[in-house]
Amino acid sequence: MGKTSRLKELAFVSSFVSIVDDRSVIVENVRKIIECNEVCAAICANGFIIRIWGSDLSLSNYDTAVIEVTGRINSIELTKERAEIRRI
Image (tube, rainbow, N blue to C red; front, top):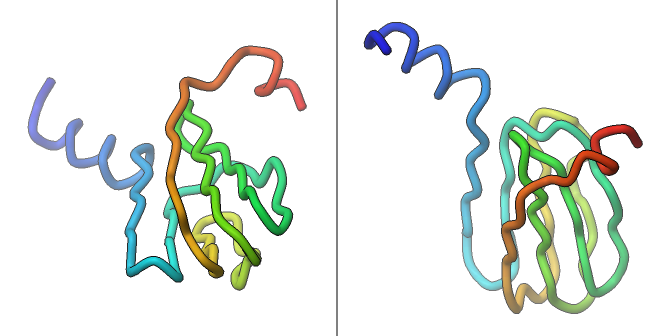
């Protein structure tokens, strides 16, 4: 894979998770929001599901490209997306 192809892949396909502190997580290049409630925010991004666990969670940015989850963050889980979730 050439350098240009790798840069395009990183710029447009890869997702980035930024843990600001225990109160804020920013996820970039989001495909869709699966759920968000007081204890869990689940987001599809680049073939993975990112689950953010905590308390008093909310989404402060509903833009599908960048999502900010705020509240008391306890843990972040990354799992490979299953085919049935892609169809939703």
